[in-house]
Amino acid sequence: MGFSLNIAALDGAIVIVYLLAVLAFGLWVGRGQRTSEDYFLGSRALPWGVILLSIVATETSTVTFLSLPGIAAAIDGNLTFLQIAIGYIVGRVLIIYVLLPIYFRRATFTAYEVLESRFGKLSRRLTSVLFLFTRNLSDALRLFLTALVLQIVLGLDLTMAVILLGLFTVIYTLVGGARSVIWNDGVQFVIYMLGAGAAFTVMLMTVPGGLAGLLQFAGETDKLRIFDFELSLSKPTMTFWAGLVGGAFLTAATHGTDQLMVQRYLSSRNQRDASLALALSGIVVFLQFAVFLLLGVALAGFFSQLPESESLAAGGDKLFAWFIVNYMPVGLVGLTLAAVFAAAMSTLSSSLNASATAVVNDIWLPTRKKSPSQQQQLQAGRIATAVFGVLQVAIAAFAGAWGTTESTVFSVLKIAGFASGPVLGLFLLAVSAAHVKQPAALLGFVAGVAGLAAIAIGTNLYWPWYAATGALITWFAGWLIQWAWPDKAGSSHPGEAGIRP
Image 1 (cartoon, rainbow, N blue to C red):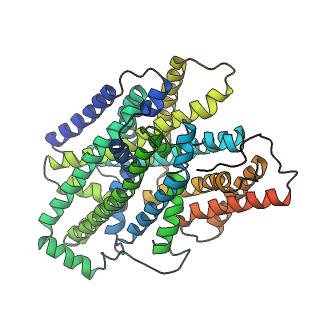
Image 2: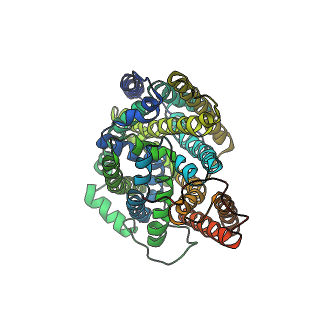
Image 3: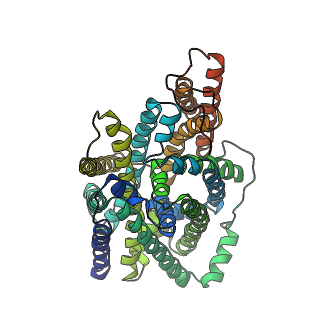
């Protein structure tokens, strides 16, 4: 369904001023880049509070801002999706005690350098390439969802909306590097939470009976249900066990082995600051998920009082955007739309910077016989940022032409779980199986990817279990191959006997 709406001049001005302000702030904060450490890691000197907000803003994106309210607002929607945030907290604790000490002891640039020190260069390059592929694919979907909002609001062609959003973000990311990205993330977190609060307030003011009326509606429709303790691997809705176990593995993978997040920890002043930021971010994410899901409950209450034709005019990812442009007061529309763009730009900029860091440090630099100068590394980082920006814009435009019927948040999390699970399995082998060498580990990784693909295609396994399944298959297969063929699966790399925190 396509539709075109115009917003008031004031709202349009707010959005434009916001985009220009983000660009200006990013260029100002990121000025004076002289070394690759400045550009890729903010000189390893950023305060923990900013790192915390950056972690939350990076994993939030427009998917959270638009898709989560749509999930709770659906006819059979409720708050059970919040259960996965419990697993997110558990996964963060594991990262703090198992992986962060390794990263800081080695003063690495990317997460995948750890695998090279344990197994060999091939492990590092393979996982880095996988990160580049899946990260740019999933974040292009996030860009596509945000472009849908621009299309709804301004009536722009979807491709033009994608290009416009990508252009603003690429410029300040390309020039300012990690410092610009992370500081802008902090500002954007504040903006999108203000936008969510403004939308919730408007709904409470328009729903008959206000908060009391909304609570009555939510109780009658079972919208406030949080826990589902059913033991099932295939139930297509969130259960407590899928959230706790699946969410813990998913976070251990995406936040512990994914360069997008690891880059934030390495930009901290020290390991203590990184641990504090990561631990508190889990609590903030839990509260944030609760806010966006409750926003969906309020949306359901709001639309329940409208004629059926109007209440069904938009659904899923588009429902919240439909409310913003049709029912928010002048001025607040602009603020809320700025919040949507803030969520999108924080993730996109982080993705571009992390991708550039990985390709330069894991792929390009190791192939150079002579170490490039700092100026050459800076130039390579900026070129890589621009290339990945163009790539994500192209993928997002293609997604718009192809179309999708599934909630974007599910698509993005499926990709994350499928890709990062086997990588987590490699890290578990590196940490806990000192006798396993690179050939066995890589064969285990292949088995993990193949096994998870077969399970995903041939069964009804619910997506939160993907990361856990891929990690455990990889770990077990690598261990078993090394045990069964100790000579053929022997070491091709004089790496460390094992990695200990």
